[in-house]
Amino acid sequence: MSRIVLGVSGGIAAYKACEVLRRLREDGHDVTVVPTENALRFVGETTFEALSGKPVATDVFTRASAIPHVRLGRDADLVLVVPATADLIARQAAGRADDLLTNVLLTATCPVLVCPAMHTEMWQHAATRHNVETLRSRGIVVLDPASGRLAGPDSGVGRLPEPAEIVGIAQTLLDVDVAGRAAGHDLAGLSIVISAGGTHELIDPVRFIGNASSGRMGVEIARAAALRGARVTLVAAHLVVPVPSSVDVRTVSSTADLAAAMDEAARDADIVVMAAAPADFTPCSPSATKLKKSGEDGLTLHLTQTTDVLAGLARARRKGQTIVGFAAETLPDEAALAEAGHAKLLRKKADLLVVNDVSDRKVFGMPDNIVLIVDAAGVRDRVAASKAVVAHRILDAVITHRATS
Ligand code: CTP
Image (cartoon, rainbow, N blue to C red; front, side, top):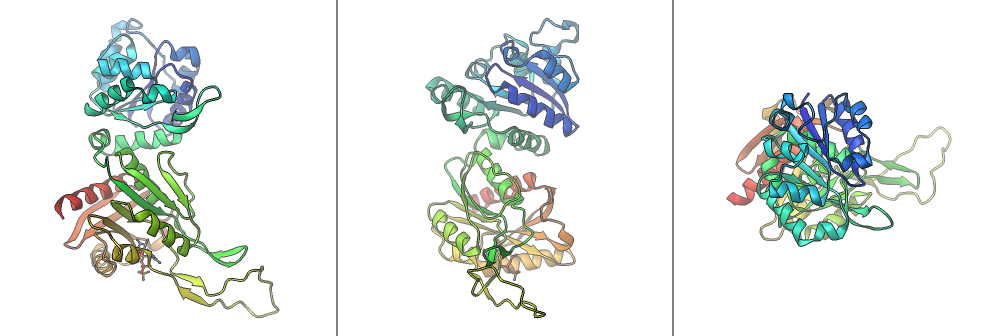
């Protein structure tokens, strides 16, 4: 359980703060809501109090004996602002302290996650750009808003990211010390292409050969890279998890589709990550019509090997490109995993390989993972954590690799 202050400022997306609050409480966190006065024009105090189980104050004079304007910020493990209006961001950047929320923001020493939502013109205005840069330079994590429907008939950039997305990022900031790298956008200017999910190889129009990959690891890498300022393309095979709004998504189905999409997307990429689970075999001649049962005989499928997408990408790599692969192995211990991973890295000519033990369905679809990150010199890192944390450690390894090669 962590202590979270949820700041809410006065924009139409304030109602989504209720969903963020509900999810944080469901995850077991202790949440104090600090709305601005204008936020209470959109969502009533009673709603925040009922959902958080705590009283709500907007000014520094309510229950002043408890010194809430200093204590709340100082005691918090995370301060989250959902939504942050242009005005709140301006007041925060200027160091103002004219209500309880800005006081909390001035006294917080923990990670601070600001989730802006406003009209496109306001987000793109030089004043807001400048204020956001100021906050980022001070280590505040400011999410880029999503594109989509805004208040009224308008649509464009400025929409609040989905509550589930915000809560996922908040949890990552609680789990791993990544706020500085996220605020500093240490992947800014880099383009990264990530494949995720399992492929489907058609047997007939309704049946396919698939695998147990959920796509969660690749999606977490995409989310982490976007948070750290990279331009992200996610080549998504079949996923059972939602994709982040901050990334460009290309959907594919078979290994052949995946290979074509990756070849194209990788041409301009600085970093390529093959986290997908492409099928190694595909039916030689899928039936154009649904196969019928034929008496007592079973069905024999003739399969042919697919192309190795990762090895192909490594062969076609352009100068300065970093290629990251994964290895799914079923081996008895970490020494054997490290050895198999290293051999696979050399065989496929990847720069880094992330080795998973997939025996007993320990990895597929699970939120946690244990991985070894291997390069040509051997094991670089061992991570036992949530896939979100693993994703950041993989990106750390990529940055180190790029700096040293
Ligand atoms: N991979 C790929 N194309 C394939 C199969 C796998 O690009 N047709 C990639 C995976 O995305 C992963 C890496 O290769 O990054 C290793 O995948 P893995 O399943 O561990 O190995 P395989 O190449 O399938 O080899 P084997 O199953 O024989 O160990």
